[in-house]
Length: 230
Image 1 (tube, rainbow, N blue to C red):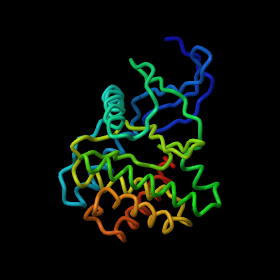
Image 2 (spheres, helix red, strand yellow; image 1 turned 120 degrees about the vertical axis):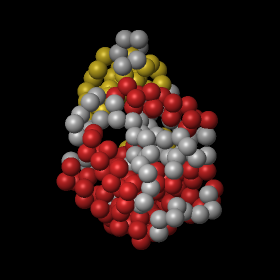
Image 3 (cartoon, rainbow, N blue to C red; image 1 turned 30 degrees about the horizontal axis):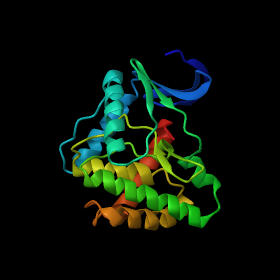
């Protein structure tokens, strides 16, 4: 499969995402790499698990492991009815279909519609409830990992740390990583609709209390700012 790289869309701690073209159509190319800073994420992950008095679950550190994990997650999420881009090619990198729409992080910062914010939060909560009900977790559940399409569907686009047979701690991380990236000025509004959507399919939230989630989210937010993730 021939792909022409057009420009870099994002550079993360664990991957680079490019806009590409193949057969005249836009595609997204995701390349995984080693970075010493990935181990800071691993250390943070282990510390948080011990603070929750739990044994740290497996964490896919190396590029090849993360690539395979993302491909497997695509299949799992698709079976659950969660919208994901189709995968066009995969060897040392992944080529996905290009999804038209707005990154959820940008959407939450730009929109002035309370109704649309609540709608997005409710859908995200409901879909996360479905994933948790089936024993899985995203682990890295930042709002920037989702695209809102013109038809207002949420598409999950980043799953390299997805975990099957997740422990409670990993499900808690879904709340912490998501809510730490929600703009603070709409946090309460987002939380109310998000939790309603979640409880629509999963009757109770993780054991971590709502105030704890807010506290952990703010700590994670500050750490990500210091480490240059956000």
